[in-house]
Length: 193
Image 1 (cartoon, rainbow, N blue to C red):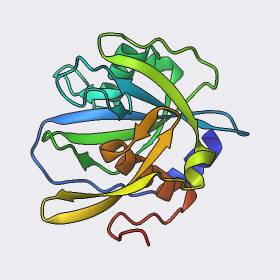
Image 2 (image 1 turned 180 degrees about the vertical axis):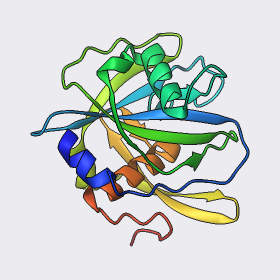
Image 3 (image 1 turned 135 degrees about the vertical axis):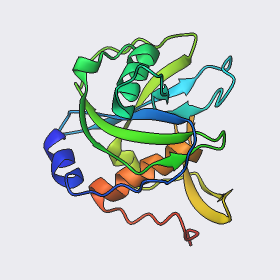
């Protein structure tokens, strides 16, 4: 999986948003399994002030001591799910996205060992789960949500994996990943017919 990600993302030009907002870094973790790679997600605790009870990638707000947003993503991933930074190989950034809470989010694709144990921090994370990339490539979305942002409407797929619903900002990042790595051609600007 690592080789495919390097090959497909080396020439990828992620979209940068020229906005002055607080920043966050998130990790888009993919297991290094050539036969059945999986993407790792979290279900955020219901006790959190923002995005509570929602599926998300591990990550969070940048601290002043973070050397970069990739470092933020790695630090937060370690804090949230117990995955040490030395177990993650950052491959490339994806396009920046803006959260509805006014946070400029920079996602980073990272390869993680296939069977590395994960230990969710119960103060922040209710559970951690993995979804085979093959599931997303079949595009078995549950629905498509029309989301409005800065005078634009984007049409975001919502996927259901077991009890988890992957939608909103996480789905926007996921679609960017699928388009960049697999040329899925999912167009967020056009409603699905």
